[in-house]
Image (cartoon, rainbow, N blue to C red; front, side):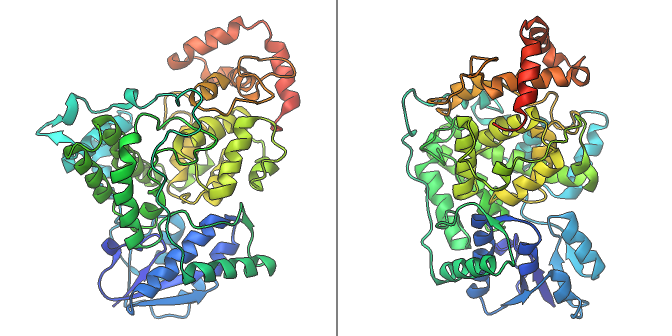
Length: 487
């Protein structure tokens, strides 16, 4: 019996103990533009895994199909992969599958949870509490540690005034080796030969790609950065690209870390008095709450979920975003954020949701194209991660399955939670004129354009009432129509 191992199943909890086939597919890299850092991570992770054991056979092929078409597959087994595309591949070649791993709740248990709820909404908070009960994480018997389930209200502080960083320990970074150097050489050659398209800036590897590195990164975060995580987890600073975020999404999405072991490590830090409950609970909620939740919704919503476009947003992704070129972008918040993506292929959740996602929704960018852009441009972007995050949470393209209102906001939020507005030619307090903030004006224009779709949504009653009182609404409409997606 041989195991077909996928590139996001590289940790020990995916290893069945026998011979392993690991495919390096140039065709998958060529199929769509990839961020340089993402291509680097995938190849480095695959090659490092192959170098770790004589049981692992690295196969270089144009595609998985090209390899499997020439193989006898009756003795091949695979752990269920993480995308519709790969599950179709497995079915086509009649490969025996085992239940998926790498998540806290399995798909059968989630289906049972959904069935129990009947007509109730599938709320994250309810799911998260049930995960806590099931795992015992941060629990004292039947009660949550600290007397409450969620400490989110304590984790929304703006960055200190005038600060360029939050003074957290520098993030863990790996030491590159000969495998990494060969990966860089290969990528440069394939780009020059026109075989693949890469965007973003070439640079050092910032994330773990081996089990050993992943454990080091986890331990380092828990010991040196978890304590400062919660307070400023929604804040952003130009000079502090990682803030106190863990940067563990990459090794978790490569299958190098199991989310439950990550959550247990954070819980232990709390029990030992090394981090407060707000930081630990906020982090655990991301790892075993939100991450598991969007994984389950990927399958629950179905393959066609990415086609949702309830707000009929049809604008193409701006060229500056596609090329990750911030040089011609005038708005500081967009320019700095795109520059961060270009450098490392990573942003934290608020920069993704309330800057890029918010602005994309305001400007009417096509949600399906935006979903693909996030998958291509982010080192932790995968087909299962992005739909619920982008189509649902970020773009409200599903009409409210993921959230009861769109996550739209004006420049005031960005001004409060970041230092991006400093020195910008636009003023977050101004709606109309040469220095009118495209996020502030864009917010009101977005509400106006979608007034009928939002009418009756009680969570939007106050902003819609404010919209009706605007005396410069006609000017905003014309201004933002002329501005378009050129920020």
